[in-house]
Amino acid sequence: MLIGTDSPIVHIPLEVKFGNSDEPYAIRTRAIRGPVPTTQVSNDININFFESRDMLLQQQIKRLWTTDINDKSQQVKSCMSVEDKNAMKSMESTLTREDGNYKLGLPWRDRNSSFVNNIPLVQARLQQLKRKLSSDNNLHDMYRTTVNDYIANGYASEVDHRVPETKRVWYLPHHPVRNVNKPGKVRVVFDCAAKYKGMSLNSQLLKGPDLMNSLVGVLIKFRQERIAFIADIEATFHQVCVIDEDRDALRFHWWPNGELDKIPKQYRMNVHLFGATSSPSCAAYALKRTAKDFSHLFKPEVALTVEKNFYVDDCLKSVPSEQEAIDLAMNLKKMLSLGGFRLTKWLSNSRNVLKTIPESDLAKSVISLTPGEKCNDKALGIIWDVNNDTIKYKVDLKVTLQRGVGYYQH
Image (cartoon, rainbow, N blue to C red; front, side, top):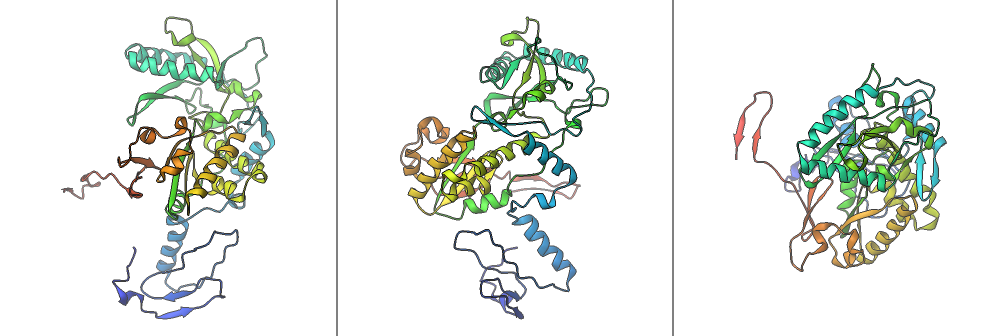
């Protein structure tokens, strides 16, 4: 609950506790207050804590700081589980950089485990996919284009049967997933959770530590300064390659050129993919390694932005001036390109900033924007009114309350 100054009675001090001159102070009132930092956040964190005898109040304050406004520090390793530590060791020990992209091994639970032959499952699922694509020409065209692009871009390649198989061979069913907000596209999702004789690919993989920043923290920092911009990493998972010896676990069947009347061939993914439980952690690790490995080439703010202002593949950043935004955007693109990542779909509340971005990298909503024309776009699922620099929410006023409590319409 936010209590404004129009309710002065709740701000009357009942008791005051002081820390040092550079630390917070506590006022016991019916409200909670604290300082807002006006300078760049340093790595030092000061906490002045006095325990309340009210256990309920303690729990509420703890939930406030750990959930609502948590801006995770990067000291993740200290609170990792044993499995997360093992996954991190796997990523660190297998990390290489080749042709401008990072390569990471799959974080196996047991690198010596043997895999069953699950081809019967995959062939049955392939026939289901064939019937689905045969009945929908538009879906077939989009799906074929997507898979063919994977092969053309090197994300996938045909299995070379002249090369000896590794001890971990697994075949992945795949299926289309559509997004109502992107009617002209379809995502190919590999079913890594599909089980055969009690085994799935995901059951053999460690999920890895949660290396993502706090969603609320990213949004709050996005609203701090006057000039803001957002950008998106293109096909994030697919920019992080899988080491050669693990790629046989990512095999799949596909018809040559997507022609359904041909005999399917065996392919394998060369990159981390949608559907694998370990992909988010591996991609986040590669992104943060990019900031770490190339921080010496740029000003500290560039690496700090990669560390603190990304949520999965979305960058949301605000700075005090247009020139700072222009310089930061340029250097962010340069730094991330060194890790194999490409920033696209740029959007800003400053037209001068947008003028410095190539048109091919701009968000579609601003490419043909005329002066004075309204522009709304999404930032982490919420609507950003770029012209007025305000955050909006699309609310369905027709709400059905759960558990039979009732129904209202406004």
